[in-house]
Length: 213
Image (cartoon, rainbow, N blue to C red; front, side, top):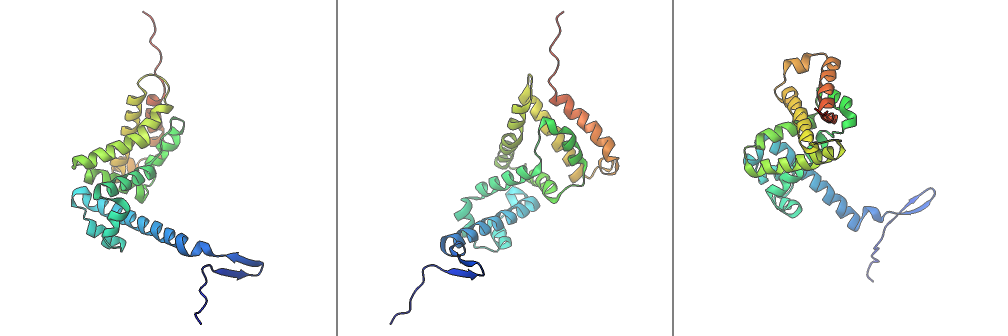
């Protein structure tokens, strides 16, 4: 007589019976798939940040993630597509700008940097020499920050003003978190944040309409 094969499992608990199918079959495979993708992304971010786009190798990334190199192609398609996703994640973690949050933004830029924020800047610098990588990073920056910010700005030249705001913020991050500017690290945070907020406000505020002659 063949043993009975159960297609579903259940877990008993004091209040009754719960279906634990969420821990088996397709759900378990989805969980493993998500964990594998995240491991690849984490490893790729480390390798791209450390080595830049050109020098980063897929086998190195797979080794760090502890996966078969073929899984990178399965989940991301190519090195370029993997880099694109890493950049999207890094820039999304980096900083969100809104005109109403200039004070908060100024203080965050001058506070102790998070590893994610510093890594995002280093990733940009070490990959910018590759034309395709630079295009990916520029497109992501414009899509995630500049265009959304421009939509929030009132008055003329919103796109140009948004680009200036992003340039100021990334410049401060570069000087403080990558070059470790002594003035930006050692200066009084409240004082520096006040100056930076004034600069951001000056650009974010719509210029006055020209007066008649």
